[in-house]
Length: 204
Image (cartoon, rainbow, N blue to C red; front, side, top):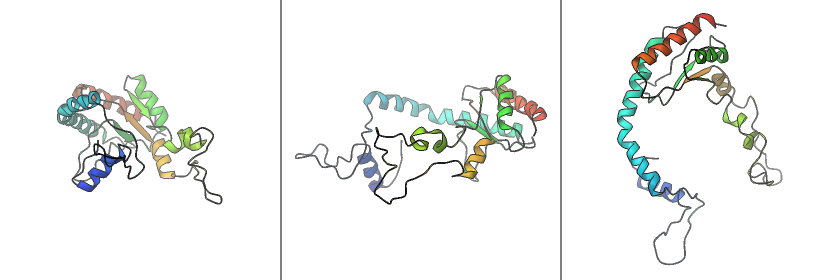
């Protein structure tokens, strides 16, 4: 879902999800003003979306309370950087990311999982451009190679290790806790306790 208060943007996005079909519902030959996609939502999906929107404020408020509690519970642990929140903003915590520059992040997360904390290491493990065969091995449309091949002499894009070194380093130090709005404050404190115990035994 995308929200805008700009009428021109709204029209452009609406056309983009409907193949650029500009004269839909009007008499005469179809007119496609640009290359768009066929992302029209069906009624069932829309009905589910409306039901979910009714819960959104409550769910986000609850997740925010739990995520903020976890931050307060672990921010004094050396070598652990809790989920950052930009000044003037609030986090929705669809998951809880935290950095562990002072630890072997993979071993740390395995220790959390042994204690029953639903944690993951590195989020995607590597940046998408390194773990997506369509990019790294140029596996796209049949044998065409498109869009990795172009006119003669054109520079072909290359997705390789070291392309975005900061992202790669950050992911290698990242842990993620997959909590949800049904957790209790007690669950959060238990997760914080597991983080504290792992920090005591898995420092580099």
